[in-house]
Amino acid sequence: MSAGAGAVAVEDDTVHRVRRRRRLSPGRRLPAARMIGPALFIGLWAIASAAGQLDPGAIPAPWTVARTAGRLWTDGTLPTDVLTSLERAAYGFAIGLTAGVLLALASGLSRVGEALIDGTVQLNRAIPTLGLIPLFILWLGIGETFKIAIIAIVVYIPIYLNTHAALSGIDSRYVELAEVQGLSRIQFVRQIVIPGALPGFFVGLRLGVTGSWLGLVVLEQINATSGLGYMMFQATNYGQSDVILVGLLIYGIFGLISDSTVRLIERRVLSWRRTLSN
Image (cartoon, rainbow, N blue to C red; front, side, top):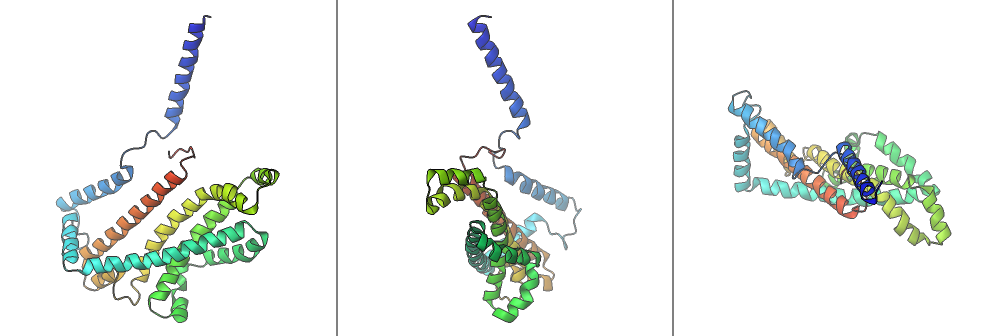
């Protein structure tokens, strides 16, 4: 076989393998892919409403909800409630994030820390967090403090669990290599531990962000005078389903934006990884 024919054969084999790999992979990332599902849902909702298939008293049309949102925004009710909800979620999330990371590091890098911390966190995980509300009201009062504390618990548990699992899953050969290279404790944490734990941390972070909104919608209906949950609770008393849907849609938008933000940060920080996602 001539050199030219051999080169052509190698090139054909390479092209064949690339095409086969492309058939097995998910394919190219679609532009604005995560907006397709919500847009399709709203489109079906609008079509069903226009066709009279939905009871407007129970499920108002999208344009009715949009008008209600505009009215609430104009009279100043919605901006106040949104800012209050964002403030509660931010405080609780910041506390939960800090606690989850610190506890995971203490437990994942030390056998003593694991003995003291991991069992307690697992016990906390087994207890329904929202079931702690009556006890926290007795301890912290009915004000803002107990709401932030519950949100922090909802956030820290998934962050701790996923970060601790990632730390525990670091290959022991990397530890042996670090010892052979004579790395200090700080160098070991910076060069081995943090890169190895980041994938699990970001999974926990996404779950924690979502959990903060799920907890908030319940907590804001307990002795609150403002916030999206309070707005929805008041609307329930007056049968205003359009106002309830406004609150739910805003919660959904906040959740989607925060999750997408974490995903974007994850892709930038972990750009060195080659996964099915990228």
